[in-house]
Length: 236
Image 1 (cartoon, rainbow, N blue to C red):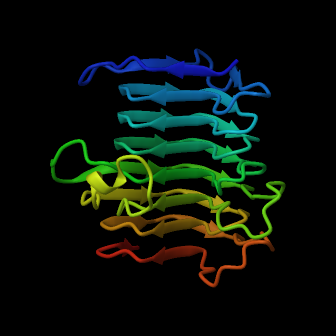
Image 2: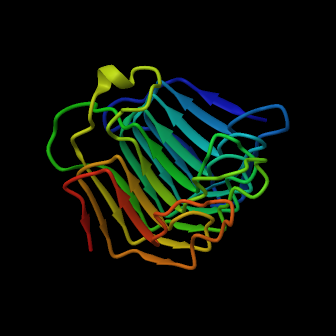
């Protein structure tokens, strides 16, 4: 079944969905549903140790949320992104394996996607962490698109909030720091790690290789690490 979660925890007291035995609890979104696990307009939620697969949409999706932790999950064989976080703040994505996703969804998806971050507060330091994830074999292979642009291992997308989606104009540019650290991104259709229209990102100590495998992705920005239309970003 597909799961929708709208209830929030409180500061430091997360609502937690955790497998007793890591990887042994399977969540499979059936045909006719979108994301297998959708967290919508909620906060202080942790998802840990699940084996997740979605039919058309994303494996684990958080929309309009803050303080979301996605830890140690296996998100694979999803039509959309393995993990998709949008319109929120204070995300921790750590220790997940994200493989063979983005295969059929026509909305240009990737392994791990963070889209249009929206500030929760003005605290200094990193707000968003993507650490120690393995992202491989995510490719837009069967979307039916004539030209693809995604299928990346990891993408930070439009933190400027310039693309016309609900609330983007009012949200404005997301000014807070993001850390992408110690990830392995290999054999993806798009880039290994991509920062597009996103500022204040530190990308350090990652391993990226053998990406850009999708012949339908004809973009000229073809680095294993890709940064475009952003500022104050550090690549280490």
